[in-house]
Amino acid sequence: MGSSWSSSSNNNRRRNNNYCQNPSQLIASSSSSSSSSSSYTHPPSPPPPHGSANPPPPPPIYSSYYSSGGYSTCNYPNPMMGRANFGPNYPNQNNGWAGIRPPMMMMVGPPPPPPPPPLPPYVDHQQAKKVRNDVNVHKDTLRLEVDQQNLDHHLVSFVFDALFDGSFTIFYFAKEEPNCRFVPLYPEAYMPVKVPFQKGLGQKFCQPSGTGIDFNFFELDELSRPSSGEDVFPLVISAETCLPSVSTEEHLGNPPPSSFPHMQITQAVIQRNNEKAFHVRVVRQILWIDGVRYELREIFGIGNSAPESFKDDDPGKECVICMTEPKDTAVLPCRHMCMCNECAKTLMLQSNKCPICRQPIEELIEIKINSVDQ
Amino acid sequence: MANSNLPRRIIKETQRLLSEPAPGISASPSEDNMRYFNVMILGPSQSPYEGGVFKLELFLPEEYPMAAPKVRFLTKIYHPNIDKLGRICLDILKDKWSPALQIRTVLLSIQALLSAPNPDDPLSENIAKHWKSNEAEAVETAKEWTRLYASGA
Image (cartoon, rainbow over all chains, first blue to last red; front, side):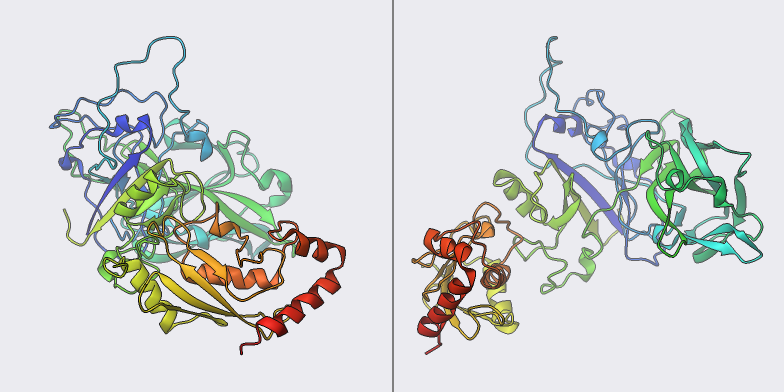
């Protein structure tokens, strides 16, 4: 299995994407598969474009998933991901989806930097970078259960997949610090609990009895939302694998940043329903791999787009426009995957609105899923 | 000829319309022009059009699916959003068209419009006025027209 990913843009942001990534920078991807879903992420800064005839891209003015080159994808299908996701982000920045969109590059005052290269053809094809997720918490399985031996306390449970042994750390009211480190704001009320796990797919994790939390310490309102800067979440689960992920990336003089642990962070809020039971809602998941922070985002409609199972007469997998080709292109910012790349290009010249939700199309991402590994 | 180079999408939509018709709706292409459909919609139950069989014509323009199909009632109908020429006031046939919509979804929307007349966005001023000033009477007129013009004879 291999995947590639390209994007096109109808404005000048595309010039930041106008270079080729060296294919040797592909990171090895996991090959086992137990799930039909996948994840798409991409790194916040482009790697050096060696081997490319094109000039290096100008440094991004705004760090965002638009202005950076090289989307990266996990292998497809990836056993480690609950759902399809993409999009990187940075700690301690405005993390809202809308907030990471850079403003249009309108320059006032000083003259603009060198003119952009000639407009490339509609879709810039890029070699995707794949990242492997060593551990995944299935975010839709996250629950809070009453500790039967201590009825005032709640314990966390969820289902997870792990390719290596590692540990979970459960934080309440943890603040995100640089390098994806988390610090509890109220250690006197709850000290983070670290619980080891062993590798394996589809495991159920139950927090050990006696290590739970008494929510009476906190206001319901406080539990129900992140801090205004979205750097403190009421519940944070950090999953860390013991073995740093080994990548096949050639570093060309740079030491491999393998000293970073490989983590998946799940950030959630806690709400109380009518029956006075607490329940969890996952707000965000983050990957921390080789010192790069990726924020996971879902792509709607990707689950039924795998081409090996594409049949000519399957309405769920075909492009909604030509109803002939398999869909392979997602629309940004709304993240609807509903078209083939040819129809997507045509649509950009026409209405330029997402066929599903009618939001203006800012960018297209082509997600090619090849049946042969590259 | 219009039938040569018919896009695969139109062929597929036609096949699916014929093999799995939507309840209360039939659409079949004309023999000499595969972009022209003869349509029949049954008046929805609990609407003034119940019991009626409404004929429509539907044409897929060259730009379809980037442009909306052109649809018109052939059967006379008393409805605030349909004028005396059979033209239909429906947003998805105009500015709210999306290429993800299909012949089937367009016809389902028209069927739903029969169940939910919207006199606040009228195409027939007089019928809309009638609807707003005396709805019971307007509904009676619609039922009468259904009997007169859409009895399926």
